[in-house]
Image (cartoon, rainbow, N blue to C red; front, side, top):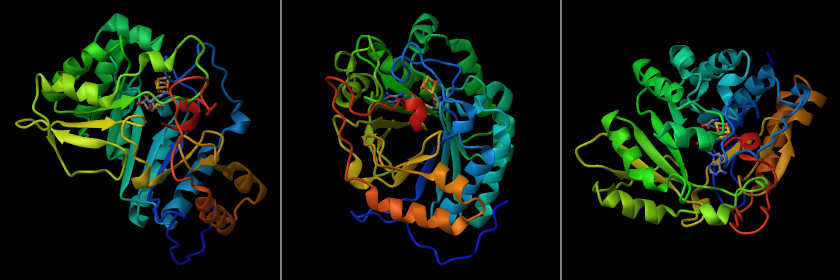
Length: 339
Ligand code: SAM
Ligand code: SF4
């Protein structure tokens, strides 16, 4: 374990006065699904030597918490396909005694039936589970290889393991699954889940998949839902990009993540670490610092790592620059980024 010298907490504040208190780690770029908006048809994955080790990720977690980070999300790729990933969850779970408020994860749910109980014991507070369709054939089309039933069993396992406020993430594509937004909300209400609808973000070159063609704005989703549910805006904010609503008479919160139609950058409180250890200062820009190099060139030097992260914050751009049409400006795919 890397010895860490106590140092005064230097809050991670960027040039625009935004404090970073939330970090997402992409623990692998690999996945057992191949969602059409996330990966190209033929994806190649990074060799293991280029991916941060679990120990390196644990070290990063400790240093970020020392720098005032209060929430860590493990994501990917699919975090639960990484071998021994429970070890990392347990290590990060221990940081709750040192200032971490929330350890959370995003998963496609395919491994949850097996792992939900262990994740709860490791200290994971909440899980977000991706679910784009309740129709098995459509689910298969959107994930290219996935089986709906497996994910539904994963969702039930998460509830049974005692996770509070399990949230579904739905990427909505026009003429693909936009006609299911109400059915998915009904499913969320029936199972006491939260649900967030996400506008597709242009990351990575997708070949046949034309993102402008599939764009379905959050306001259209809200209008669709309003035909069945009344949505009451809440002041709640997870310090993130979502705008939240409640459905009266239910426990369900409905969120909208709208990078195209409602820019959320002014309140950004987060950074990401890619599977290969690049500290990405913005989802939709390439400003980054190679933390893997710092970790490997200066092993055991926590102070060096702290200083690299603190100075990297000065590179955080004001906002993303997503454009729906034409070639995407960001060539890295979402699975490499840590969505
Ligand atoms: N494999 C896990 C999963 O699917 O939940 C975690 C990683 S995945 C990259 C994290 C989230 O990003 C998922 O909710 C997924 O639907 C979303 N996502 C992937 N590609 C996206 C894109 N191009 N635009 C918007 N959201 C995307
Ligand atoms: Fe895998 Fe998640 Fe990307 Fe789908 S969205 S391909 S499940 S990483």
